Image (cartoon, rainbow, N blue to C red):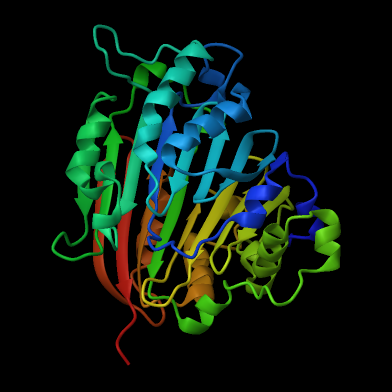
Amino acid sequence: MPATSLDLSDHSYLDSALSATLDSTDAFEGPEKLLEVWFYPSVSALPNAKGLRSISLDEWCSMLELVKCEVLSSKKTAHMDAFLLSESSMFVFEHKLTLKTCGTTTTLLCLPRLLAMVESHLGWVMKSPGSDKFHPYKVFYSRRCFMFPSKQHPIHRNWGDEVDYLNQFFLGGKSYVIGRSDQNDHWNLYITETNKTLASGLTSDERDETLEILMTGLDSGSARQFVADRTQSPSEEGLAACNAPGHVYGLEITKATGLDCVYDNQKSVPFVHDAFAFMPCGYSSNIIMDDKYYYTLHVTPEDGWSYASFESNVPVQDVSCGRQTQHDIVCRILDVFRPTDFCMTFFAKDLLSDRILQLMHLLDSLPNYVKRDKVIHELDEYQLIYLRYQRPAQ
């Protein structure tokens, strides 16, 4: 189900003034910092009727000020709130939150406010007995190594400092540097031990698989697709639905690149789209499928430090009725961006181990690329595959 102009008219929130004035001229750092906090394993495990989605927009905006980003727009479904940010995205479910920010944002500095909100607004008791540290169900924090680490805020310049800061808040944290640490393309991961006392038995909400593709050196022709031609007015149909040109240009880029058709939606699950094209270049989009799954893309197409990311928790075999695999999704994304180098991570719970094995086999080779690294980790109940590929020199 492709995106349409109807997707421009159903925002739960849209900051038209920010949309009109946001300028990415000084943007330089594409690789994002990705924080995911599972306070509880599922909605059914919540201790009371209130969840994260009951926290007001004003409170979220206040927290994001600490991160140095703002909300451009948001979309709501029955199960989640998806925020398109001035620097990437945030997804809020009742029991968990994912915050992904690029540039020189200070992602980890949201933690004191976030943890205070769940205590004061929701009454959740997250501290471990006899400890002043928090022990939610699971915490993930990850990022690719930065292109320009010296330009980051001090808290984010060094991976060891980030880990120390996280350990001030959480119990049972473990740190990994995955890939070649002597090169500038490794991937960093922090993960806490699962708080199994918060689990209430296996539910459908606990199913979890996440694919992330982090691409550098985009093909110049591919990168040009994400430079909105502001000399041409956006469509009248789009402006009639949403008087925010950046969002209208964003929809046009999504449709022109086919990024609204990454998944073969054979089940015809509900489809919600939100995208923004930055001035003078750059692109972000959130796409929600079946009200509870998302895939998100962020592109900095500038020559010399071009970068694009794709992240998804969509269960591809379910929505496609078995017609697609994660391998197909990877190939479709690579066809759009044609990077010279990319790394890929795939997380899945043990109950999905058959898909891990299938993916390892399918991704042993990819057309037009040479595999440089392959790392497999078992992390409590999760399995992780990390792969890095390069396009051979011509």
